[in-house]
Length: 185
Image (tube, rainbow, N blue to C red):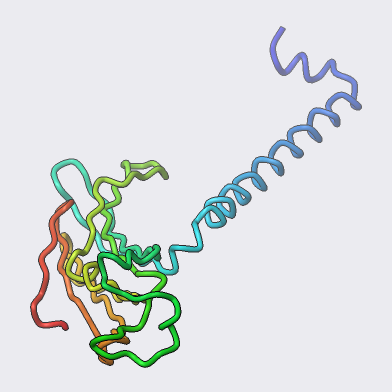
């Protein structure tokens, strides 16, 4: 018996029940897709205050976009020479730097997309050591992507101990490769 014959011989109530189940399944799937996206956003830790994505890169059969991420983590006071919490409100001096309970770190990622698919994967992640070694509390990102296979990232902050603005500029190319520009400071 063909599918058409089966459907023609079904009672009207059964056809209505099947159509209703199909509609409920479609609505459930659609709301699950939305919930999954919201779940992804909600799964981002609060320690990631900023993410920027843009540009395009290609390396052999792989290609994708650049992403820069700011991560806040606990400052290592032994490494940074920062003092105890009691000095947090005191003005900064060479002998008494302002305490930072946290530090901002910046990373560049190369994300690849599979042709014709919505899936992506991180190919490479690198730490921007020229900024991260400064142990600053905040980092703000600006990305410029005027050329394929090239992304310029400007990271800015404020050094409370030296009372000055700080900026670091890097240019990323193929996965894992970036150069530091000496111009920004």
